Image 1 (tube, rainbow, N blue to C red):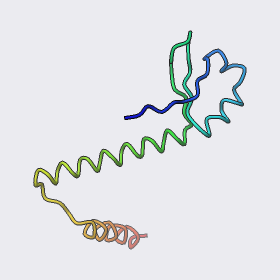
Image 2 (cartoon, rainbow, N blue to C red; image 1 turned 60 degrees about the horizontal axis):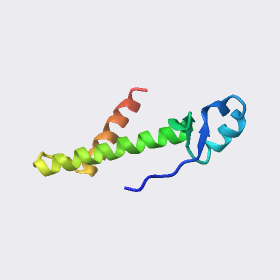
Image 3 (cartoon, helix red, strand yellow; image 1 turned 180 degrees about the vertical axis):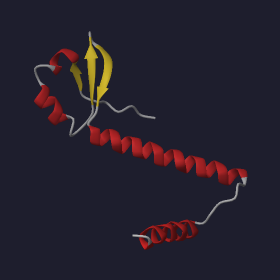
Length: 95
């Protein structure tokens, strides 16, 4: 797996370059350095949320694959969609 090279920034520049840093985070995460060593990674909330959603999606795919390999019973997508629609309709009927 190839490592992604991220821009680096000395942690001391956080106080003086806040607007520039926040703007740069819209494009890419940044590695904060302390005494020349990586100390932390700054990432925008949007990118963080997108990454967390992707991790969750991949986890669910892996879990589904493992269940299928074990021979666990599965429910077809069409049946799940039908059940969801039926529940949504039953909620709206009582409105």
